[in-house]
Length: 141
Image (cartoon, rainbow, N blue to C red; front, side, top):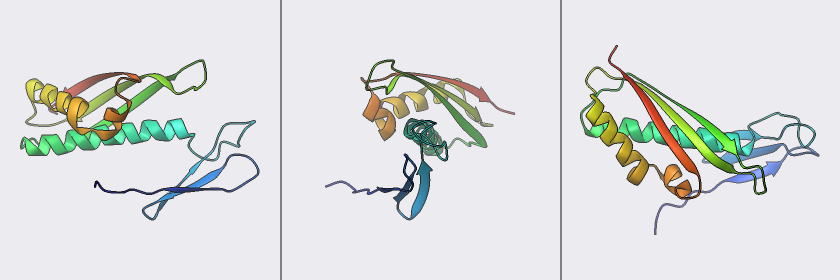
C-alpha cells in the first residue's frame, strides 16, 4: 500500500472561507464575492500552485540525478476554465524558466519528457482530461 496523505478543511465564516490543514501546515481558501470575500486562494488557484510546484520539484530532482546544477527555477501556470459545469480547467499552460551553468537543451528536453510522462504525480492525475502545454527558457547566466 502506498503512502497515505490526509487533509481537512473547516468552514470559518457564513460564506466560503475554509481553513485547510495537512501535515501541520495551513492555508486559507475562499471564493470571490458574492460567494466569498476573497480572503484566500480559490481552490483552482491552489491546484495551479500544486501543479507548478510539483513540476518544479520534479525538474529539480531529475536535474540532480543527471548531475546538473540548478541555480534558479520558476514555473508559471495559467489555466483556462471550462464555460460549462463542472468549470474545471480545459487547458493549462506551463512555462518553466531555469538557470543552470551546465544544463544543455537535450538534457532539459529529457527532463521535461520524464517529468511530464512518468514522474510528476499532479500532472499524471490530469493527463487525458486537461490539455497541458509546457514551454521553457533555459539560461546559463
